[in-house]
Image 1 (cartoon, one colour):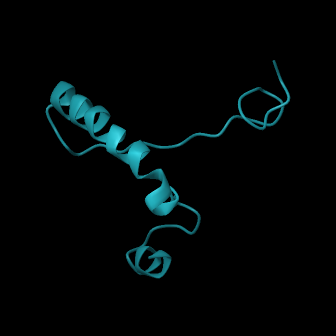
Image 2: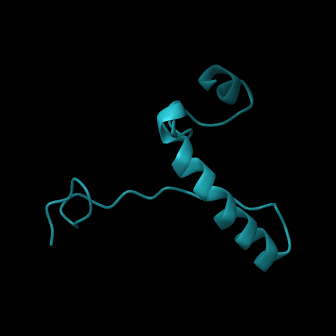
Length: 65
């Protein structure tokens, strides 16, 4: 899949692998979020980005509190 995305012009590191079948339940819960945003904005033309916290600012793996 990474090769295909690269061929389509996506930068390396942009795809996020959600983990296959073991995370399927989480992906199913994404559908209501997606549909809610689409209904509120009136379009399916939007993107969602995962933004990781800076080191030391908290969150899983972070050192802050």
